[in-house]
Length: 448
Image (cartoon, rainbow, N blue to C red):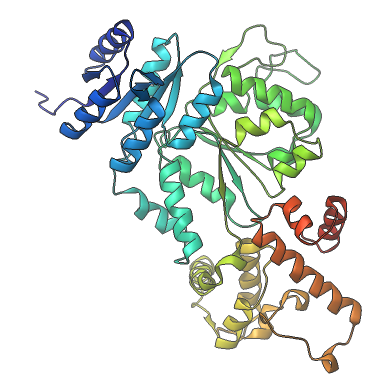
């Protein structure tokens, strides 16, 4: 006989019919419900009882559901809250997600969607186990990394779309994996797709699938990426590379939560959480009319920025030791030692390729070094990216004025980008450059 206590759900709505509908539906799911007619009653119940989920209407007689979300975030941030909004109130729903809501429902409430949402919320990991799991996968004790781990912990408990920004090689896909693995969809598929690697003529078929005979070469029915990710997470890497024609179709799929395969007549309902990433400045892509503004707002409900390796130099030693241990294990050789001068060289290198470049540099040095000791010369670092912060060049040591000026230009542009959190438009304004001139210089310096 199962004697475990039933999970408790708090329902907050001033309409008796809605409360009764929710109570009956959740009761059939073997859940214990408590109801409140307004914000005051809800706060009083939260004071007395521990709940596993809260469902709240947006409009309450003495306040708003957003106020309740904020109250719960301060008191019990691990309690998931789902907002019930009027049909078409997308802006309200997005504000709720930004405030920390787990997900949202629209009126009239669809019971299958309600049951799905509740089941998903109740699968969230309990408080306490998240940070440890994230820490094992995301190395580094610098303040930017501590903040990133904290944000991942929070976002894993939400169903909000997340736009992961950051430079190439900084670990955006790893961050997406962690958000998925620490959330209620962890047991379901995580489907990553590089949007820039799919030929434009095959894009619709890849995303939505196709029916047999719908085009030359379609010899059998094939599900698309949305169908493959059903119940789980779809990670759109390099989303800025999507052509405008595909952006329209992607927007509709996200809004309708349904897709139609190429050659198909019926739409298929899909339940996916969308995470996306790009190394480009998506806001600047919108300004340049290469990316749809409406899609940008649907994808960028919450932005999570992954810091560059330059912003967390204190983590370089720990990362290097981890890479060298992995290389020793993979090759079956004794672990190589990093000479102090080599470590200093790594700390003074700008790493335009970030963690991925650090791994490549160490893998090459691990192969080239003698006596299992990596010297500074084994690293073969590009001199144009080696800088001693704040040091002025000795004119007697400048062999090539063009190279020196280029290194100064690179340093100033990187500094402006870092100070504006890689907003290229803002960085260009700070340097009194036009956006077109900024884009040209980034491409010339290999920073695009």
